[in-house]
Length: 151
Image 1 (cartoon, rainbow, N blue to C red):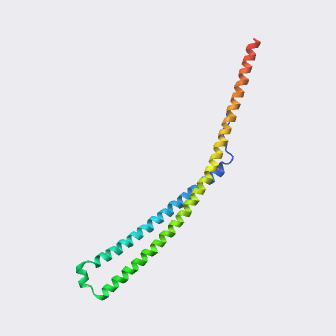
Image 2: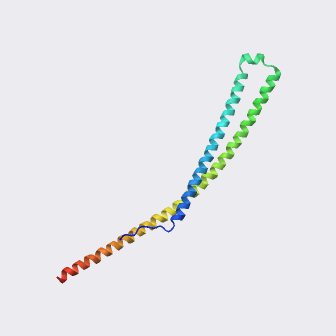
Image 3: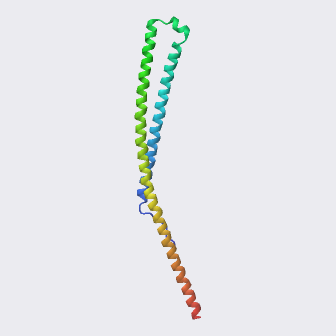
């Protein structure tokens, strides 16, 4: 009758796998936030470029009032400030994502330690089972040969 392998730290391994999965989800969310913030930055840049392009057309330059020009300039300055603020938000998001990446890497390493330990235990178990099998087979062979010798 063969025994099945039973790893005593399986619950620890299960917990570490759950932690790793959680850290992977957190990392993915952090990367999604970066992507979203980059899209917002691109949108603001496109809006500013459209504003500047529209104001540089020869027909609009002649017909623009001073008040309208001042409003456009103020709005362009607001967009410039918004772009700079968005860059700061992106930089903060990148720092957060890096922290999540490091946490994920640590969780992965922690899990790998237990997985390697499990493999070592499994190998030792197989080796022991093979040794026991050889011992049983040797005893059977010895009994058979002793019965043959008696006859």
